[in-house]
Length: 336
Image 1 (spheres, helix red, strand yellow):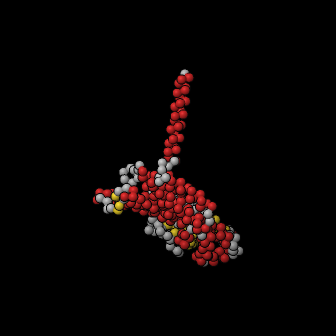
Image 2 (spheres, helix red, strand yellow):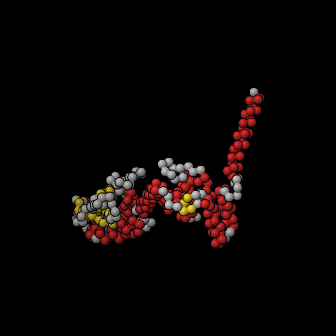
Image 3 (cartoon, helix red, strand yellow):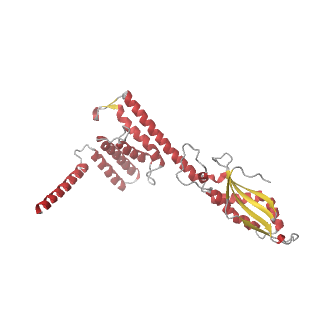
């Protein structure tokens, strides 16, 4: 039993020794001219740039990036692992990402949309460059690749550029939805290139915000006011709501580019007990439906004293608005 335990201890020490030797082989360069040396130079450059100032700091940091790119490219092409289905080395993807970060990243956000968009194309270019040289090391000479190699290079570049275009298209759509969030309420079922992953918004959020913010302002101008003044206000509802709506939109949608694509209009309808005021927020921007869409909040306005005494000229108005807003697809009803 002691002999068996002794053998297991020896095997454990041998495993640790092999592991340390592997790490040492990876870290310690076999010769001065190696990829490890370039990586160490990049780390050294960044460390020195921390203590430098001015343009000297930028030059040293720039040199560190160059050493890192060269060292990474060297290491990943020694024994390349190919991306399945292509002749692109996995190392080209790593080097392409570093080049893209170096070219389009900045201190605040290292990875930017441009970094992601250009990454596949840069990786394809890095993969294609060696095909235009014959020989190795210092004996390499520029040469035109063979026909079958040229075909592979063109196909790889075309696919990579197509992927870059789709990535750019994604960022464009994402930017549109951030600047024009009301577009998220559109129906994309007929779209051949847009797939909705998140649940569809039932109503445009900004349209709801406008109606909910303008409701108390309308109530303030009507509630408990003399009925004669309220009727005059309703006659001028288009101008009155226009002024209120402009202030509400400017205040609540100032961070969105779509604030100029909303229009507020009233619809005043005579009812048995008084009037019904329909406040419409109409979307004038792009829409999946040619007729567009709009939201509506209805408010019932009636004279308090006129219910029992219609002849009473001192009646005041009361107003009661719907709690929820209605969403309609199509053209708003005509003005009366």
